[in-house]
Length: 122
Image (cartoon, rainbow, N blue to C red):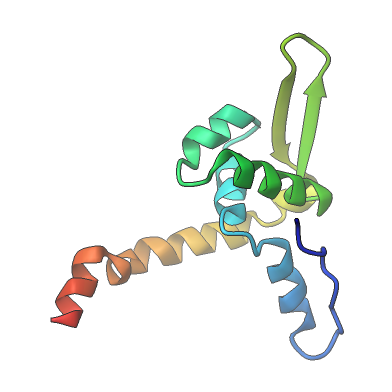
């Protein structure tokens, strides 16, 4: 069962941050959006780029991104069916945010490496 979509945004201080985070709160959503920065992709292409996500999770996250207006899903009437995903205009507006997340990750990835945790625990 999926969670209710954006059920509580009370516009208290921090509301805009809460609203933004609620759009990308799934484990794989930012990763999916990042890969769609490269352009339109079919489901299996996205699946190859996000190997840690199960098919069910990926499907659910894509549906939520579509419902929230961050991606556009295009279905072509052919056999077998062809479905493509691309960023919407709203999704494209997240480009600087996704680029900043990648830059921060590139800079700090060493802090989260498995060997680093083992060294710090010793």
